[in-house]
Amino acid sequence: IMSNKEVAEQRDTVQAEFNAADSSRMAVEADYNAALVRLDELVSKNTEIEGLLGDKDGEIAKLRNQIDAIVKNKNATAAELGKAKRLINILNGKVQTYEQRIAALESDNERLGVEREMLVEERDSLDAEREQLAKLGSILHVSNIRMMPIDIKRGGKKVTETQKAKRVDVLRIMFDIDENRIKETSVTEFFLRISGPSGNVLSNAAYGSGVTKLDDGQSLNYTLSKLIEVKKNTMVSDVVVDWNQDSDYQSGDYRIEIYHAGFKVGGGNVTLK
Image (cartoon, rainbow, N blue to C red):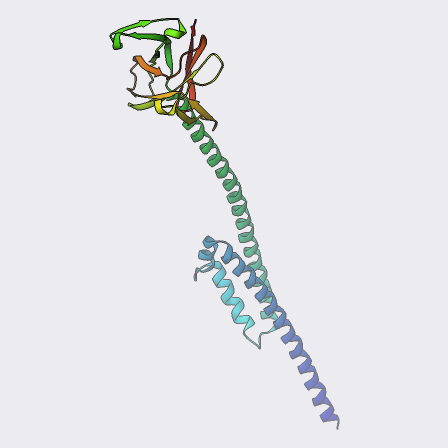
């Protein structure tokens, strides 16, 4: 009876020791698995870290091999499990170092991203400003604007200038186009708007009147337009545009406005008696 009792007690002691050892091994295995999860998260965040962790001869690989051997050994001693815990602590320390490195890289990337966006915005702003300056610089300007009321007699053989409204047959507009260093050589359209004494715009679609758009989007009724070949760095002198109308001209002030590329580029007036 005493012998059986001693055997039972020894069996219970061994079982308790086994359970304790198994519990310790499982705890070590749980810590190890947690460390592996952190490693997987690092790999998913950074390809450079993936290369370091995948190196078979690297420190991480050596640590994992040693820990694997202990954790998979169901008969691992307490000393071996203690060694495994120390190795897991080392592994976690290296993981933490990599995590800090990735956090720093992400912070730098975020800062660089913000700086890059600022540079892109600045570049776009400069491009827009440069484009606007080029556009404004290519606007042609006119000078020496004259309005000549013309009296035509003898079937066009005699042409004289007059100030009397009842004798005016044609309003002749003359002007110069100043040289421009930006505008490339091309045929360019100018729009002329003539306003009568009452402020109304002289207009007749049969004689070329119409509507155009200004740079600000507003519509502009014009009296007539003129296509003129303009050469870069070259002045165009004495451009002549004649306006004919079926009705008689009224006495008073007549005003001419000249537009190019949506901008007013000159103006003048004449008074008829």
